[in-house]
Image (tube, rainbow, N blue to C red; front, side, top):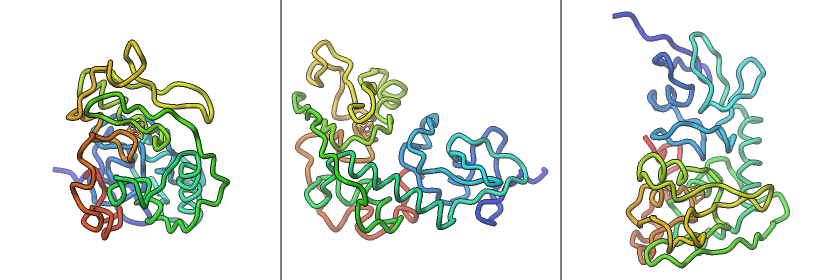
Length: 234
Ligand code: SF4
């Protein structure tokens, strides 16, 4: 059997199967490329840009770029990580991400990426958005001001739960998660706390109710491990 084709990621040979993206091949090889809206179970949308890498001076999203033989991909360059940090800082100021009293702290990919990228402040002026919190459902809470618009719940509800409960609507800073129900509220939707759409949320925006702090602070995945050592979806 012939050896699989390879490309180089920061000088490391990464084998890939035809049809795989750079991100998929890197994940299969155990190489971490920072990402937020990507999840290996879903088709990529290339939205958050955190997984951007450089190939021959051109910046591309690694979750959508097909792998090909002989590519030389740069990911861990200081300027690429600086750009990633700016993206994470923008997400922090566009929402209300108050980690010390968020139930998701220690298990939040936004927070973990901030740590991973060495973020010490939020750099930009905070927007303090006034999005509506939807607490209407008996078992599920949606805090839109923590939503990073990754569309993972949109994809999971449609492709795994078979319900199509969520969509992204609005423009600019008013862009937010919409609910597909007669009232526009969770209580009139088909969502359930056990849906993949709820558990896949990488931040504290969509959460089951009455499960707060089941795992104590200090014992959560990113309280001690860097997200590169404990990526969420491998
Ligand atoms: Fe992503 Fe969570 Fe917002 Fe859905 S609610 S778009 S999963 S951050």
